[in-house]
Length: 270
Image: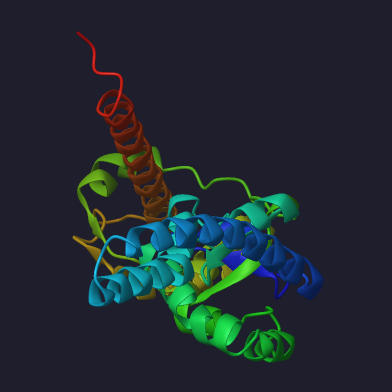
């Protein structure tokens, strides 16, 4: 497996290639242009507001506007789009976690907060230097947030989904399966995808060794007599199914919120 391959915490192998330096820079410039337009409108509105309040209140409004432009808007955009700002969307790149999964509020907030120093106060120099020195092109905000930028259009699943062993469906559905460390998840996925090509002795030895490591994150243990390889497949398949179910719930909740927002401000039905 190449150094660019990423394995998520749920042992999903992805072929995610870090975006090139030039692509990241162009995406940042586009994002800054869009943010500049939004900032201009907000500061214009702030100026109108300040004219009707005292000096202290005006300073507070101005400070809130600055924080909103530099931290709030970038954080909200990257959180809601899961790492796809307008500039990144235009260039076909996105921000992902180090394990290949979508970023959340915490990651977006850290990137935006650190970006105030490295992109604005430092005029981008710290970000450029750090990005050029890192093999994944990470800026300081990425190092602290545990993220990096990938070429979304070139990546995708490169291995077939691991099927759930039928005899372990009932056990897996009720088992407490914790998040697997990334290195262990990588080892599981590699083994399960390459097991048919291994010699019988190597296959048995590796399956038993990995089963011992994985068992520390699973309770209760599988039914007595379960083959180690079937146990590993059940764990990977169940983690994948639970992640898909979680994403489905999030999407349904987002649709419900969107429906409510559409109705509340202007379009309440009779």
